[in-house]
Amino acid sequence: MTIAGDLFEHERAGADTAQFLVETFASWEPMRVLLAPGNHDPLVPGSIYLRTRWPDNVHVFRGPRLEPLELTEGLTVWGLGHQEPAWTGNPLEGGLAAPGGGRRHRAGDGVHLALFHGAETGSRPAGKGVHGPFAAAEIRERGYAVALCGHYHGRRIDPESGLVYPGSPEPLAFDESGPRGPVLVEIGNRGEVKCTGIDTNRWHAGIVECRLDGVSSLTATVDRVSAEVLTATAGLPLERTTLRVDLVGAVPPSLGVDLFDCESAVREATGVAALKIRDLTAPATDLEALAEEGTTRGAFVRIAVAALAATGSAEEKAVVGDALRYGLEAFAGSEVGLR
Figure (cartoon, helix red, strand yellow):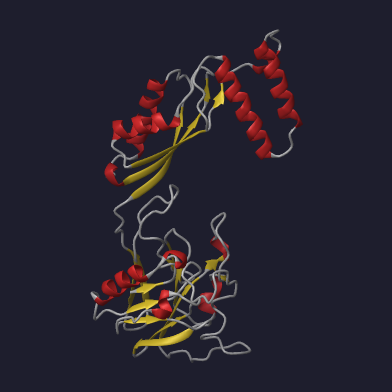
C-alpha cells in the first residue's frame, strides 16, 4: 500500500490521529505500507511522522530526494518526503538519475517505481498549488516505469507516460464527481506494468445547474430544483450524495429566494445528504424603462446603472449588481434574499 502524502493535516494531527494510523496499518500486516509525506503533512519538527513508533510493516520516506527501497528482487520503490509545506523542488531530480545525466542503474536491473507528492505541470487544475512541480515526460526519461503521485484529487492513469494519480478516496469538493478509489498496480514477470482504478468511494458529489426562467414563487423554485436534483442523482445513494446547485436565468424582482429555506425544502423533498445553492440569477427587468420613471425606484435605477458603468473591476461590478438586485426586490415588496 503506497500513500503519496497528505495523509493528514499537520496542524490538526495529534496523538489520537497517530494512534488511529498505527492501529490501522498494523491490522494490514503482513502487507507493507509506504508513506511519502506531502505539503499538508511535511516532515517538519513535531510531525507525527517523526514522533510516532510505527509498526514494522510501515516505511516512511524521510529524505528530501528520492531514495530506494527494494520490495523484492527486481522491484524497487523510490520515495521522498516534503521537508516543508511550500517545497517547490522537482521530485524527480536525483534518485535513478545520475549526476550529469544518465542512470545510476543499468537497463535490465528490474522495475523502478517513484512515489512522491507533486504537481504535474501539464495537468495542474486551476487554483491548485505548485508543490513539487515536474513534467510527466520526465518519468520514463529518468528510468521509472510508473510514478505513483499524490496532490491532485482526481484520478489519472496515463499508460503513455507512467503517471498515476489515484486521487482522494472520497470527494472533497462539489466539483469532484465520478468514481474514486485506489489504483491497483500489477507487475508481470517480464516487468510489464498494468494500472487499474478500483471504485470504492461511498460518497458522491456534483454540481447541478438549474434554470429558473418563468418561475415566480418559492414553491415553484423548490419544485424545479428538486426535479433537477433527482435527475442528476439518478442511480446514486441520495443519503451519501452532496450537491451544489447553481440557480441561473432571469427571474422577476418579486421572487426573493431565501437560500436557507430553499436548501432545507429541497433536502426534505429529495433526501439528498447535503446541498448548497448559489443564486446566480439576474432580474428579469427592463432597466431602461425603469430608469425613465419619475419615481423613487426610477431614481434608484438611474444611480445604480451609472455606478455599474463607472466601476472597473469585476468584483466591484458584482457588488453594485447585487445592490441593484436587492433594491429592485425591496421595491417589489418581496423579502430580500442575500446571495
